Amino acid sequence: MRRLFARALVRPLVLAAAATAIPLVSATPASADSVVVGGFPVEVSDSPWTVALSSRDRFGGTRAGQFCGGVAVGRTTVLTAAHCLGEQVLGSPPEEVRDLSVIAGRTDLLSEQGHEVAVRDVWVNPAHDDVSNSGDFAVLSLAEALPAGSVIGMAAEGDPAYSPETGALVYGWGDTSGAGDYANGLRAARVRVLPDARCKRAYPGSDDGRYLAGTMLCAGEDVGGRDACQGDSGGPLVARGRLIGLVSWGSGCGRPGSPGVYTRVSAVLRALGWDDTAARQRGGV
Ligand code: ARG
Image (cartoon, rainbow, N blue to C red):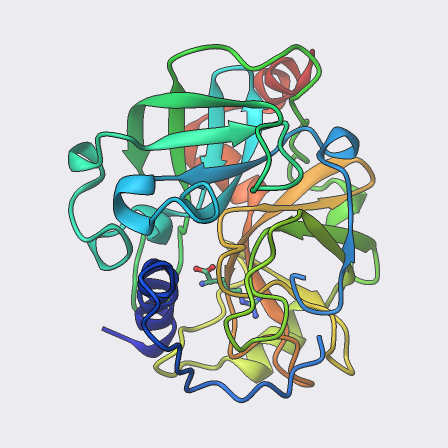
């Protein structure tokens, strides 16, 4: 198992451990001053399609069982990262996680705000490759519909939202420092879509993964500082009001020269056979 996946596993377990007062030791230096490193607090009502994936059974109840992010693309359809549902993270196949749910409309995980909806069905992309990290997406079907208006449209291939330099926001309840400081409140960080060349250079292929422009999207800031981090995986990257990426991987968080790598949503649409029209309909309220 590679480092980042190991970390994705270890962090939630560390959270569970924290609940039982086991001292928290992190291998990652607390240097990244970085959502979400380098982010700011936001209200979920401003991005109601941002949801938390939860299992108190697996991750403890301290932060409502949050362990990954997700994004509502239909009232009963949530996209997330495939690696969030891997055995390395969940400790078992997702079908065996009886209390797997999605928390919508809750800015502060410590509050009772919004609601929790059970996941009825999990579909993990069979083409997910955990060597490169390519194809890192999964589809959750919810037992009940989310409120109208809590759905975001997905940017189809060729949408200018994918162009380098486009400003984007990434949302999540993940680590705010790179040292295991998980947020209770939803945060967002302002990043930019970066040229593929930037991530190809940063990630030519190592234990962390390999950047593949066809299925991945590169975003961050050249100087680092603002980025997604552990616990944000599966959550949305949004540009021009449309979903362009899902938090997937990176080397550390917010490090200069190591941008965030996202699952490219246009590749998800292609893989799922959701054409433009279908995407728009799903995106519609
Ligand atoms: N794999 C991480 C997770 O499971 C997300 C890492 C994103 N890292 C980054 N530097 N953008 O939550």
